[in-house]
Amino acid sequence: MAKIETPRPIRGTQDMLGEVADRFVRVVETFERVRRLYGFRRVEVPVIEPTAVFARSLGETTDVVSKEMYSFDDRGGESVTLRPEFTAGICRAFLTEGWQQHAPLKLATHGPLFRYERPQKGRYRQFHQIDAEIIGAAEPAADVELLVFADQLLRDLGISEGVTLHLNTLGDGGTRAAWRSALIEYFSDHKADLSEDSRDRLEKNPLRILDSKDPRDRPIADAAPDIDTYITDEARDFFGSVTEGLSAAGVAWTRDSRLVRGLDYYRHTAFEFVTDRLGAQGTVLGGGRYDGLMESLGGPATPAVGWAAGIERLAMLLDAPPPPRVHVALVPMGDAAALAATGIVAQLRRAGISADLGFKGNMKKRMQKANDLGARFAIILGDDELAKGVASVKDLASGAQQEVALDALVAAVRA
Ligand code: ATP
Ligand code: MG
Image (cartoon, rainbow, N blue to C red; front, side):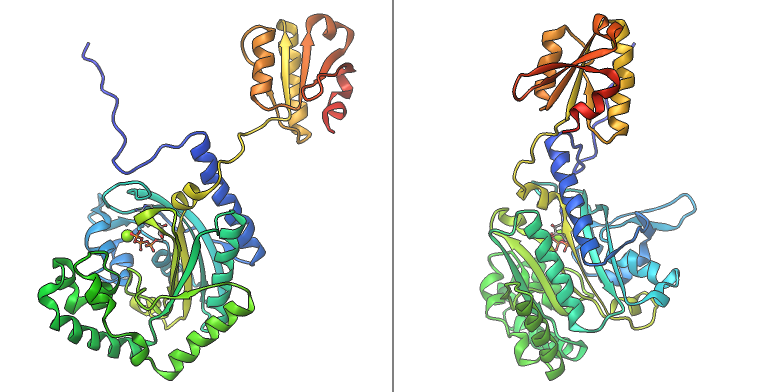
């Protein structure tokens, strides 16, 4: 018979086990705890959406839409896309599910996203994000709340060291249009020295040239006109209120007038939390205000602001999590004892005490396993002891051992 080849995983996807998975879970659990503290409700949206949901809202010329989307025609001939980000899908749901009636809404979600990128450390084709959005709030206080939430999340994960909040304003519609024209004029004068990518972007998306990573673009981008010359009084006041709020909440930030972010829908506040510990993949959390997005999806003008963070990138920054521990290890010796242990381990777990059974091996091997599990107690069950209705409870820290009646085991290890 021909040898069966095991199919390889899809490039840029990950399988996680042990410590890697534990880190991932820690990010998600911390996020879930903190989002409750801030009163954000959990929302779930589909992994798959009509392609138009992303193409319209993210902007046709963005990297994500122009080259990273997983789009295909389904069997009914409809163009569908695996979500490359959360915001557009959440806004689609807001409009089609009639969530307007609940606005303002503070929403949080997490899950897998898909982008056809060149896989490398910290960059995958299936990756995962945590995401928070406030929909239907035009006040700068909403931006502040999201930023303070993000800051607390990073602190509670223990990774705020070396992380800086980079903050910018992209102004309102008027500001953006004036700034955009000025940038097109400026970059046109330097067209010959720009990278090919940036030359392509010049007319369509000149703001993106500002955060180009290409060394040929850097000096030109760094000397480009600042938004501050074009900003309307209203937009300046808005930004002032955001920074005042951050100061009041004790969140440090630094102005980064080159920060524009990759998606077209941002207005006013744009921000990134950047670490000095991940090299080129240093942005761990990013977001901003997207007051124009709902209209691009055919909905009414709806102010909104949000952020997303890559779970894998946050997970890489975490200290090694402690190995999973179990409180009680059961060490049954003999067939009757094995069956009794099955009952006891169930009782312990129902009482909320973590417990595990050593499945194989002699007494020594099983005691070794109990130690490996980091157990506080071992319950040793022999057929003889069982006949007397007792078991030995060994305190693995002190080595002390005592006989305990079977019906008193839960209480004996509860300490
Ligand atoms: P980058 O500049 O690194 O490509 P981005 O601007 O495309 O990031 P966003 O769309 O703002 O990223 O997504 C927010 C966060 O999601 C990023 O800061 C990062 O932590 C994470 N992220 C984005 N793309 C990937 C990916 N392909 N693999 C892993 N994490 C990712
Ligand atoms: Mg990207």
